[in-house]
Image (cartoon, rainbow, N blue to C red; front, side, top):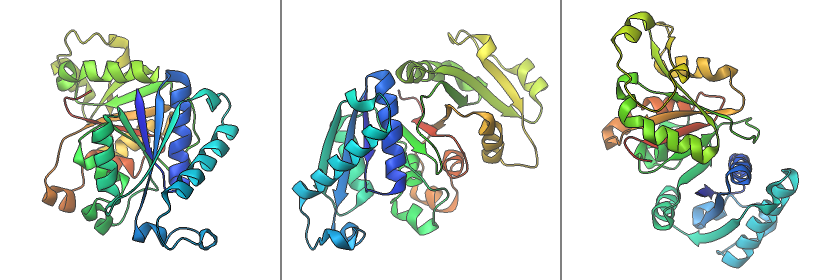
Length: 273
């Protein structure tokens, strides 16, 4: 497995890098750290760097120093294979997407600081926007998260769709070395349970359940509330590609969850591994 981590030296990026290193430590994955620079990005560099034009070699050295510092902080990650890429791109999100597709990485891992401004979503310059593209798997790391071995995947799905989603979920459980727990949220779980046909998914019945949701809360808030008790897990959700106007006027459930949840969100393109 190959994990791509966009890195801009921010706290969000450091959290994402830490979690990528821990995942790689336990799964044997490789980590590709990508730094994209342009005139706008350079304005955010510390003044003591004295950057007036891109110096890719120097930036690569700074990224390497950051990686070395994080490896020293995280026990056991010194054996993880890490590749560094520094390049120029006018649009950050476009550069990330292009690199992800070009390298055919399995997972894009990014930090998030919660719900972002509407204009940022329109421009596609943050984690939630890339999730909405639904082009590839994205793991969003929330603020205050400390890197830890992922032991459980809590998959929030509609059980009527589980037959076609099961192989993807089992594949990710294997990649992360995690136990899979599938849940559906329903106001009337007893009725849903009697009418739902799970079929032969290969997922033990004990790991499939219907959770009673609070009708006064949105689905995103119900998911956030339910996962609050999990501390070494990720929440998996499936994402469908959305139109430009849908992205502007109606945030997807997964996008909303990524801005609320306290554990990482694993956003998976519908129907893809």
